[in-house]
Length: 321
Ligand code: ADP
Ligand code: MG
Image 1 (cartoon, rainbow, N blue to C red):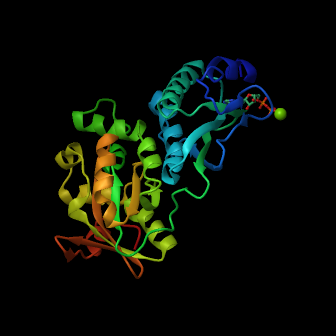
Image 2: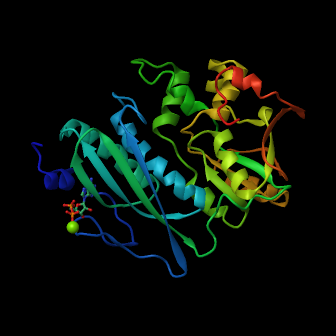
Image 3: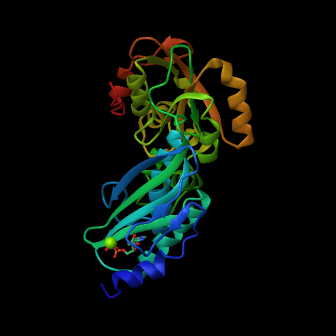
């Protein structure tokens, strides 16, 4: 590398905004972080490999945002408040144009989610980005996958399927208005962090949507030992998605497309008003999609009538059956 590893870190990663929890940040052997009294540490790591998790010629600034947003999404799923994150960067060479663009997007996300960069690792090799996040929750208050109970409502934040639609235009050089919406969802995901912190005493179970609603909700159901009925007519679809695809494809994208980084959660039906009030307070779209029941598995309905799952299977989209 023309730039030394230490110059690279100093130039592009050492001036991120820090936070009160950071006792020692970048520059020593370990970062030292303090937790609030009575809190436990939540941690999660996410890796993105070029050509697998993002295209070979990405929007590099967007990529900087996305790699952090995807990792923060796991904190959101637990209702954890961010404390800090580490970045393990594997680069083929020290391309300063790339580094400037990447660190810009990363710093924007770091500020937006109020999560400081506290350390990392820099190595040479095929482009690979790994982010480990740290957060805190009051002991015993973390949102888990396992708390859904029969009778609970199933909720989801935001709109679904737009990031999947982005995969259809990712390599384009010019974008329609709708495609710009999809690209923004793909590169600039905003997992609902402050909202999920407020849900800690309201939701019974939660998961973030990284693999697609059907697959991720199935994880809640499996961990909770329950089934759910989900109304496909209630799926939150953006206007851009509805204008660009048939109803069938839009629903399939919303059910099975990944990378939405929205929150799926369950809560007692007694919490409906509280949830709508919170959603309004945080300016978050929140949709009630169905309800949890005893048994196992996910059942789809439209206007109360079961949908034959082969419908989506035949389209090649449904992978959770
Ligand atoms: P060590 O050899 O002790 O593992 P390094 O020389 O790899 O430390 O890193 C020096 C300092 O820079 C450490 O504080 C480390 O956390 C930080 N660091 C290294 N790479 C990055 C990176 N890509 N982003 C942020 N901090 C980094
Ligand atoms: Mg060391």
